[in-house]
Length: 95
Image (tube, rainbow, N blue to C red):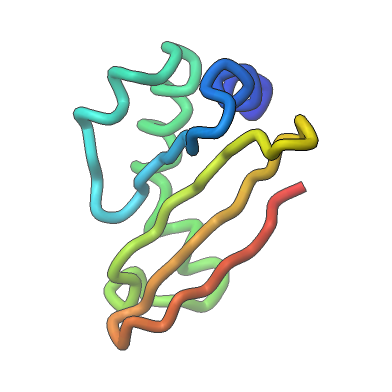
């Protein structure tokens, strides 16, 4: 899946490819390759379980998304962003 997202980010040089996990955005899925869509739907279904495995209640997450973009140096960067109910933003780079 990451290979497909990286290819898409290369094609959209300078633009961010975003996957919204919470809240869901099904319209956005149709802009993604089929393999990515299938993976997103699978992980969306498992998201409550995956979050619980980290000791977090899904109800405290207001927004959760993944962003992939190509920087000016042609490097691909992937970042997970979560925002809790208090509005605090958490960012984590994914390597």
